[in-house]
Length: 71
Image 1 (cartoon, rainbow, N blue to C red):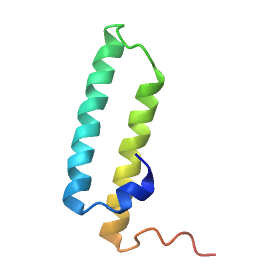
Image 2: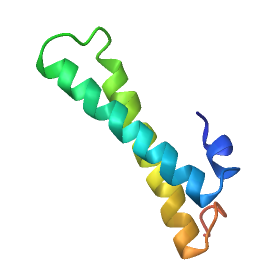
Image 3: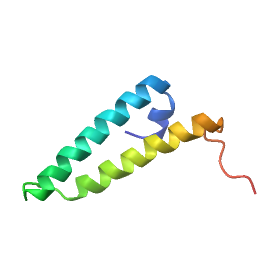
């Protein structure tokens, strides 16, 4: 899912999708440990997804909401 789609979600929806992605990441790690993971890039994608959601949640807690960098 893209960042713009996450920005349109409510806080509750973001936390639910975070739980879902973390659960998926757990399953991917388990498959990797048992040598059943077909596409190793899925691990990287899931980690980035978790980071993306956590970043948006942190921005909202600070009140930034994606204003970008100030120079």
